Every structure is written in C-alpha cells, then in structure tokens.
Length: 452
Image (cartoon, rainbow, N blue to C red):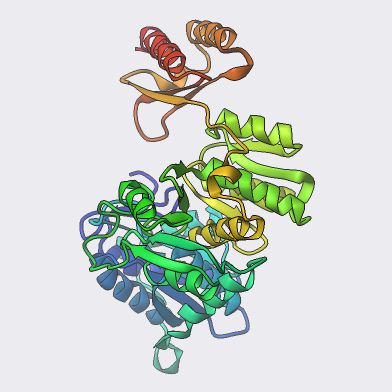
C-alpha cells in the first residue's frame, strides 16, 4: 500500500479515493498526533478549516470538522478561501493547525486534504507519517480515546477571515495600484472573491473572468492552466495586465498588455530586481528549481543575482529558503513564495506585487519581463524504460555529453526520472526551437535504446 501523503497532502478522486470516512479519520489522527507531540499542551486546541468551491468540499469539510471536534479541537470554519489564506490565518490566529480542502489545479472530481502546523507552515514529513500510521491503525479497528461533555470541540464560522486576509495582502504592498486596469481570472476557484477584492482595495480598476464558481466548474477552461480566455480579455479591455490563478490560488501566471504570457520565471525575475532595489532580497539570491528556464539563470547572472536551484516542487524551494534565510523563490509554474509575507506560495500576493512594480515604475509588464529572454524549452517523455539507470548508463551519459557540446553556453540538457511513472523526462533548452527539438529527439532515442 502506497503512502497516502504526497508532496502536497492527500489527494484523489473525491468519494472514491478520498472519502468522508478517510477525511474524518485523518483529522482525528492529526489531532491525536499533534496532542502527543505537545502542540496542545496547556490550552484548548484550535484549528482553522477552509476549502475551495468544489462540490465535494462541502461533505469533506463536514467530515474534517466532525473529526476535529470529536477529538476535542475547537474549529474556526473560514469557508471558501485560498490555500495561502488558510495558512496565513492559522498563523495570525495562533491556531494549533490548519486544514485546507483542495486539489489545486486538478479537475473538479478530485479533492485533497492539506494540514498546516502552528504558524501556517507545512507539517513536517515525520508528523505526516505518524498521522498516516495512526489513521491506518484506527481504520482497522483500534478504538479512539474520545473526550465527552465539555471536552468535545466547538465549531463556529469565522467570516472575518476574508477581510483579515485581504487586509493583510493590501497591507504588505509597497505602493498602490491606482491607474492600472487589471483582468483577473479566478479559475472559478478559491480566489474568485478574494483576488478581485484585494486588487480593487489596492486601487486597480478590475475586470473579472472565471469568478463565478458553482461547485462544478473549477479550472474548467479558466485559470493558470488555460490562459487563452485571459489573453483575449486583456486585449479586449485594453488592460495593463492580466492575472491568472489556479483552483486554490497558491500560484499566479500573468499576461502582458499584448496578450503574451508571463510565466513564473519571468515573474520571479521582475520581483527579484524589485526586492533587491528595496533591500529585501536577502543575500541577493533567488531560489528556483532545476526546471527554471536557462534564460532566467542567464538574466540573474547578468543582473548580479545568484540563483540557487532545487529539485522540482515548491516544497523543495520552500525548504531551501527556510534553511538559508532567503526571501524569494518559486517555480516556472507560478508558485512564488515571498517568505517575509507568506509561508507558502500565494498567487494573489504574487499578482499584487507584480502589479505594484508596474505601477511604481510606470513601465509596461512586457518591458519589465523583458529582463529575461525565455529560451525555447522542449520536454519529451520516454516511457517504458528502466528509469533507475538514467544516471548510471554510460550510453546515456555519452549522449548527454554530445548534446551539451552541441548546445554550448546557450543551451541546457536535463534528464529526470518520473516520480510516479516508468518513464524518463528529457528536457532541452536552446536558443533556437528547431535545435531544441532536434537535440531532444536524439536524446530521447538514446534513452530508449539504452534503458528500454
């Protein structure tokens, strides 16, 4: 049986993989494990629970709340809010844990459960393992130690959470957004109310699309994985920029006034220079992943900013930032972490800071994003191979070396075994898209021949 917790909580098809019984059991297990770890020592425990608008979030929220309250935890139910809002409120309210129900950018039938520790930080892997072990033990029949009478948890709606989170977002901006017209795509998700409200309070003229969630339409043709509608809307409304969120609004991609995409690497580049100018970019360093575009790396080198790269995944970016005290990091996908103001990727905050830079400089987003040139990037998946030998095969190493000689300083090769499938991902960057495709094709053939 595989591990329940992945890199971003427990996810699966709601009511099939992720059931009400599982949500209840995991919540009770989390309460017991945190109690045993001393988190609740000397006080009555409190949890913040939020969700995105998926229909399944309604019954899963009920199960989580029931589980926590049955374990003696008081629950503040904040309703539909972004994942970073739940993380922020967990810290701001000095709660003992936070729980978010969302499957982020996944299709509507999926859902997930993510736990936050005190302060709004992701739970340590060791605690997740203990929660899973405890959950499995009790799912097979071991009885719980249950409080009774006044010992059971109390539940109340915390409607103030919306305003508190929006006020936090607007309060950290270095300047207002007066004079900007911004189109916001809420992906019919958790940011559908929050993001337009935050931009409006900051002074922007706001046009919205994808902000009418009905429980079934989350991520359906809108949001950061479907930019076409946002691109058209920005051009149609002659806006200065567009902002696209995913279902739980922990990421942000942007669109410039011409309708061109501005990805996470470009957003990081703009924010890195803004933060350095303000004296906020600690160590003059930004954290990215091995999938960061080579153009980003070259731009940061030219601008005197060091790039530290981690394994793929915002959790690894965050770990590096916390370990070394860096202030800014993120991924090409739009997960951007500004650690002085958020404990996780925050798409609304990222969009606001990007717009603030446009407003402060008076420069178009296309001009600001032009600090880096996105080199063409080709990704080829090579299936049905022995991915475990990708780093030890002499034939693969020879093919990579030949490709690197051909590409020189203006290209890059990355071979990466998939974490979940029997395949190897071949990524090639080059100054020319045809060269990138040619080199990627030859490398894919070499991997198939050597490892197939």
